[in-house]
Amino acid sequence: MKVAVLHGPNLNLLGGREPEVYGRTTLVEIDARLAELAAELDVDLATFQSNGEGALIDWVQGAAVDGFVVNAGGYSHTSVALLDALVAVGRPFVEVHVSNLSAREPFRRESLLSPRASGVVMGFGVTGYLLGLRGLVEQLRRAGGAGARA
Image (tube, rainbow, N blue to C red; front, side):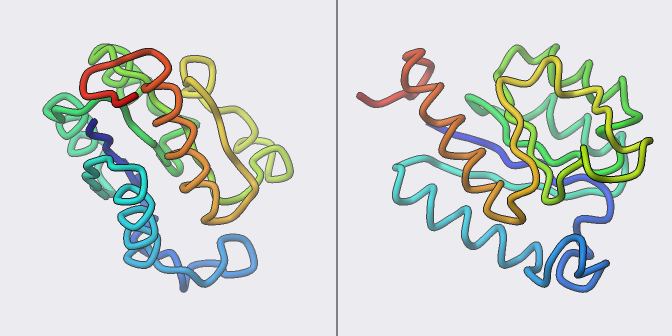
């Protein structure tokens, strides 16, 4: 089984950007934690971060994976194109947010991705990525998807 983690704009600044909201863990540290969990779950993992909407879409369209964990950052609230790409490839995705969007500014409270996501994890800090990966892998295994193990 292969899973991709997609990090959207400004997530490369984690660890230094608004630590009172996002914490002090860097994106490199998040990816390392995800790699450890993927190894434990016997899952191949690919990660990608971009500040550009087109690069994120191109990566989704080209990814040979069974599912996605997605933190689209600000594009969660604005990108119909990213949503369309995720839906078009026909693979499940779990949406992840470090902060609790429901407790944030009004413009952040609605995600275009959430209604089409298999699940949404938010407000648990960077642990949300790990919860999202566990949830997605469990879903894929239950569905008996490509590469799923018993």
